[in-house]
Image (cartoon, rainbow, N blue to C red; front, side, top):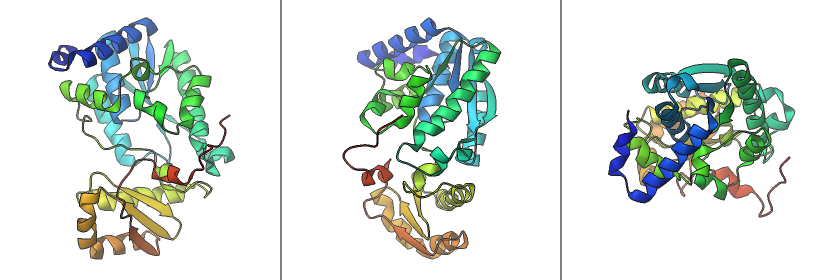
Length: 284
C-alpha cells in the first residue's frame, strides 16, 4: 500500500493529497477516531503510510450505535493497514442529552467519543486526535464537527480540501476495500429526532438492515418510526424490494414492526434532516 500509486490521479487531487500528508507530518504522533468508514479508513491508511505505524493509533468507539459487522470490519481493516487498533466503550446512551434524540444529538455522541479518545491518546503518548471529516461535511448539518472543534480534534482531510469523491478515488488507488463502501452513519440516525434512542431500537434497526443486506441490498436504510419500518434503497432497487416483499415484510415484522413500507424517493443520506426547520437548533 504505497502512495506512489497516486501518480495515476489528476494533478489537482495529487496536490491536495500532498497537502494532507504535509499536515500529518506537522502533527506528529496521531490517534485516529476510527469507524471503519470510507473517510476514517483512508485517513488511517494515509497516516500510517506517511508517519509509520509506530506513530499512529486507531481508536474505535464501541456501543449499541455501532453495528457488529462494522466492528468486525474495523478490526480487519486495521490489520490490513498495519495499524494498532484499540477498542473503547462509549456511553452516549447514558447521557439524556443524547438519548432524548435532539437535533444536535451528534454533538453529545462525538463529545463522549472524542473525550475518551483524547484521554487514551494522552495516556499512550500520542500528540493529537484526528477525525475523518472531509471537505463535503462543511455543507451539511454536522453538530459533531463542533464537538471535535471544542475538544481540539483536527480534520486533516477537510483541511486539505479533500472531498468524498477525492477520498474514494485515492482509496481505490491505494487498494483499500472501502473505496466503494456505501455511507454508514451510526444506527441512531435511523430514529426520528425527538423519539428516544434505546439499545433495543438500535438492535432492531441493525437486524432489519441485515435482512436487506443479506438479500443483496448493499446500500440501504431502515428508518425506525416506532411501529413502522421505512425502507430506503436506491431508486433502481425499489422494484426489487417490492418483488421480495413476501420475504422482507415477515422478517421485519418478527423484529417488532407492525408495518413495513418503502420510501419512493429512495435512499438519501441524512433523510431525517429533512424534518429540520430552516433555522437549525443552536449547538452548544
